[in-house]
Length: 94
Image 1 (cartoon, rainbow, N blue to C red):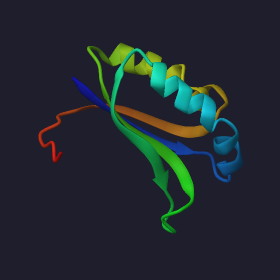
Image 2 (tube, helix red, strand yellow):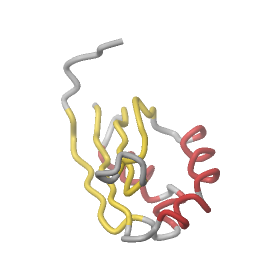
Image 3 (tube, one colour):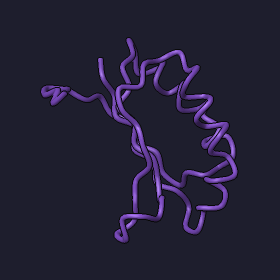
Image 4 (cartoon, rainbow, N blue to C red):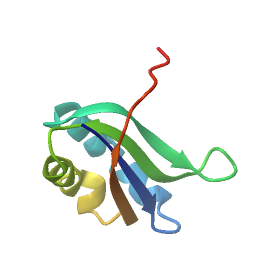
């Protein structure tokens, strides 16, 4: 099953995001779930990072919740809101 994790940062958190970016990337590379696609959400200026979006492949919602709970960005309190929802992937444009 696929899941979407949509996270919005606290206002003015770019420095906190950048300070923890390497730990976040390392975590994604070793996570127990498959990341289909991920990346930062951007502000209207199309440059400033304001959140994160992931499409994850996992067997259960509990696995995805555990993955998110252990993300360094979550542990340092970067995100002010997190939404995790099942996702029905229908198109692969590769």
